[in-house]
Length: 254
Length: 231
Image: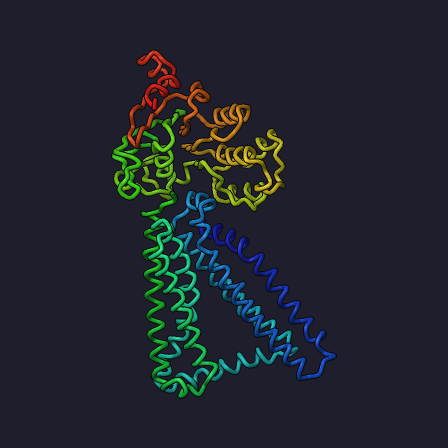
């Protein structure tokens, strides 16, 4: 049943995303031809503006929109009746949403990388990623602190979509349990936003600005990463236990 | 073993009781009318049995199992509202039911839809309210379930459609199954029923056979209902 649920969910969520992604890639392929006659600096500026806005568009389309919709089939009055009367375990419903969340995030990253390569008419971005991977041992494994940072970053990459999508689904489940009471719903939203902003901030200062002394010592960044990792692990565990229990024992579709 | 059993079932909405200490036992092969005026607790009882509402106390077992994913596989539930995604086409809804309910008989469903002249390529939301209700009933009755729970299946349709719905219910359920029909339109379904349950202010006030009611009180179930629930 889990396989069927995932298949159904992927069909529902991915077809619009694939159409959006294909449109974006087509734009990336065509744009360099359209702006070719323009002076070089204008061409570069248009490309940069396009990729910047496209990045926001991709985040909204592939992560935020699905995220805001993900829990809805389980709690929205019409389809909630359908999904909550299916002969499936509550945990299968939740795993389905996590899997779709992960895949949608991965798809967003792939679409963005491919789009950038098409826009630049070069494979530099792939070479850049490979170079970055090659530098990982030297950058992280020279001290125990660097190793810890690396582990945190990997864990964050794995946990971020899980935590993000999980807490969104949990928000909806809690909202259903308490009949859309504001306090638990708002608490979940705050947790989500905190995770998102902390992640963006730490990842940004760690990767985009290697001279991290502007923001404090390297140790501060490492500590921040560790705290965020622990925070996300706690969030995901709480989500799992609470969400599964509510779906199993306290379902409340009035 | 009873097919459906409710033991000391109580449901509170806040402090207000919607069901008070309900004890019920239903055998296989019966069509049961769950009757009561609006707000008496019929839908609450049905939702608990369908697994979309949790009781405050007590429990329901169906086919020997407490309500959960095992019972959902043997219960075919028709809510009193639209519950399929309205943007889906009828064909897609059939695909969905076929995928998730192993007991779903697609051919039977397609035959019924064909008899009703319902276009299977039509989007659900483009159908009239009555047709939407018929489609949902067809979906629910096309399962080979052990227990059918129908919440107000004839409430919102015209008398001609009511006859069709009742005929569909009778002709599609098998003798090992039971059907619980919630309604306050007793006269329309009285002749279809084997047993009746009356619920008043969340309390069970009667559970008897239709013949038993007629013999004991010398009235039809509809007349007795009007007497019990007179305002």
